[in-house]
Amino acid sequence: MTSVDHGTSTTKIRNWTRSFRLAAWLGWQIESNWADPFLFAIYSLVKPISGAAILVIMYSVITGGDFESPIFPYIYLGNAFYIYVGAVMTGISWAVIDDREHYKTLKYIYVAPIHFQTYLLGRGVARFIVASISVFVVILFGVLFLDLYIDPAAANWPLFIASLLVGVIMLALLGLILAGLMLLLVHHMFGLGEAVAGALYLFCGAIFPLEVLPPFLRWVGYLLPVTYWLELMRRSLVGSVAEAFPTFENLTDTQLFGILLGLTVVYGILAFVVFRICEKKARDRGLIDVVTNY
Amino acid sequence: MSRAQSGVRSPIVYRHFRKNSGMRLFFQTIIARAYPRLIGQQREKSWMFFDVFLPLLGVAAYVFVYRAIGAPEEYVGFVVIGGAMTAFWMNVLWSMSSQLYWEKEQGNLALYIMAPNSMMAILLGMALGGLVATALRALVIIVIGSWLFGVEYEVSNYLQLFVVFLLAMIALYGMGMMSASMFLLLSREAWHISNLAQEPIYLLSGFFFPIKNLTFWVALSASLIPLTLGLDAMRQLVFPSGESLGFLSVEVEIAILIVLSVIFLIGARYLLAYMEKLAIQEGRLTESRR
Image (cartoon, rainbow over the protein chains, first blue to last red):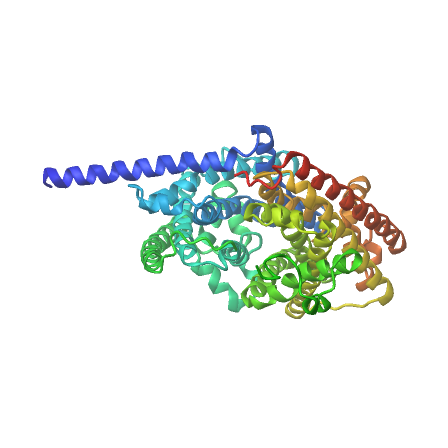
């Protein structure tokens, strides 16, 4: 490598790091500075706990409070970790709408000497932090009050950390795909993120085993990396859940992790290709600084 | 200087345009504000898709949860009805409560306040248009949800069902009109509060399970939200086992809904007057503060 190449690479990395760091800081300010810390904490926790409580009440009404059945940790943990999907994936894509429509700053950010994709990824960090706290509190609530049994000594922590890491990267890449599409959308931008998050919630077996879905719909779940990620998260914390349902009973943890990794690479390539195409189209059509007022 | 420039109206033109004031202006304002919600919204067909498709995704997820844990089939019906009613809650939250805030952000609020019409009429128009448009969407959700999941209904009293629905909607949109003024006093918090008031309300109002399963006092407190009792009464009236799972008797729930309707409509008028007074006194209520 020549010294010029080395210098260019170093500059690029420095630029990406700076873009990511500043975007993360900006995202945190936007997410948190509308309220005092106490109100913000309540806001961040009430929503996910309520979502979990709906499922817990539905479950306890029907089963009479049989929280020891393996379906309960399946539902509860799937729902808890799904918080990351909504937060990270839609958080990154929402940055486009927020900057373009609300703050009307996207055009300035776009022409600034930063790496745009890295900037958008950085904007997801704040929501990732808030989501992590929510996930922790929801699981703690389950352990303390709902007989959700997680044995820290039996949990597979290396698998947990590795799956969490790959999963968050995978969700960020899905968010980048959505962000690219958002650059082109004017009428449906509010609905797109919710529609994708809602569809994933239904098809990836977050709160029920895939066998419950009609057979012609199950294949959708098998194509989604979120399905494998949620299964790994459950298995790493409560291994017995895996044995109770036939969905992935024939797959070992390593095989599941391999599939997750492979799908993350595929979706990663797709994300960068889709984003570049959308970005070019948005630039050609003059949509970068469009304000639709929708 | 021509007559038009000098502000003097031609007698010919004047004959055709009666001066709008009083009740005539009030009702015209209602119709004018309802129009974009009823007609304008239908022009963007894709919105209909999202308005129906998104609640259906949630409904489907909860139906499959009930099926995964072996719930009786009427619970599937409870979810379909609850899912359809989420459309009304979302409409009240985002298109009633937050509406004046959006108008402020877009610069229309100042025009509303300056115009010689009643703000109450504007809110009533928003409510009327939103109610009818959302009813269409809710109906589609019920029809598709019932068809997809094979839900069967057995209506025990059509008149009571109609009265319950009507009262629940009057009280709900009255609450939306009231909260529109309160939201106006907020800034960026408005968006966050609307966002926050989804899952907790779905939980407290029993959108996906019978409210009776919460403790009595929790259910009673949740009854301040009109959809809680409206949903409970409707489920009692359309499902054979609904009565045994009901929180209070339908008659009592109707009586409470009447009281809530009156309180919320009076509250809306009072808060609106207060907000207009603030707008005049402080002169900065229409400022967009990002």
